Length: 91
Image (cartoon, rainbow, N blue to C red):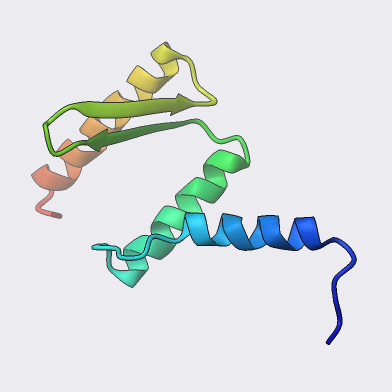
C-alpha cells in the first residue's frame, strides 16, 4: 500500500468533500447540478444574493461580491424577469 506524502492534505480534502455533500437532499439531481454551478460562479467572483427561509420563517441572507445597493438592484431584476415570464405565460 502506498502512503501519500501529504497525509494532512488528503485528510483535509476528504473532510471538505464530506461536508459539502449533504447526507440527504430534497433537490432533484438537475437542481443540485444547477446549485453547484451557481456556487462555482460566486467563487469565481460573480455578484450574488443568497436567501434562505428557515422553518420559523426567519430569513437568512448573504450578499457576495456586491454592495447592498447592487444586491437590491439584482433582486429588482429577478422580480422584473419573473413578472415578464408570468405575463408571457411561462411558469
